[in-house]
Amino acid sequence: MKFGKKWKIAIFSVLGAAFLLFATLVVHIAVMVHQRGPLAFATIQMARSDFQAPVDSARAQEIQKHILTLKGVKSTYCNLKDGILIYTFDNRINTAQQIYDEAIKTSGIPSVRYTVSKKDLARGCPVMNNSSFYGKLTAIISKVVN
Image (cartoon, rainbow, N blue to C red; front, side):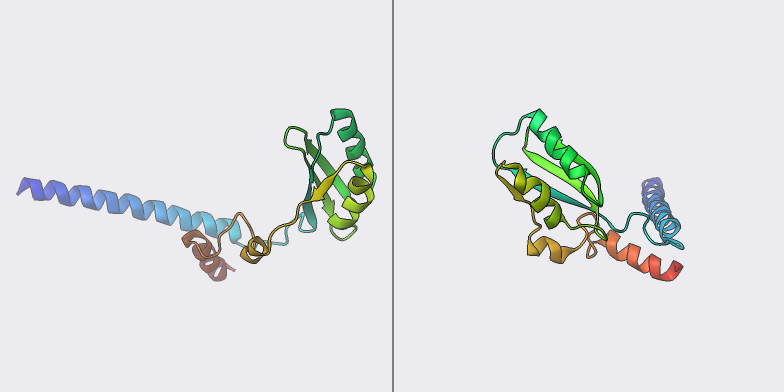
């Protein structure tokens, strides 16, 4: 008889802990989505160019400085080891293609502008999987709270 009582206590403890963790998740999501306004940087985007030839640091800095002089460009980052240049820009002022054409393509270093595949574009945000449990739960709580 005591063995059955211990199992009941263990099962109810595990179920209780799971319920408390789930409730914490729901409350956290509700707090995060409650009266959520527009994103502060909703028009800031990132773009990437892949260099097909090695680039020395002096040349990379020169390209980065040139990119920063273009309208709408906010920041740049160059990973010389992998040959990648990333830049952020305001999409109301400039486009990734215009920045690539004006600064990177004219640099004389062979490069390719990275573009997202149609499959990845169809999925939407790479961080949030809307068909996952968490994505669906967030959508439901957002509708209830807002």
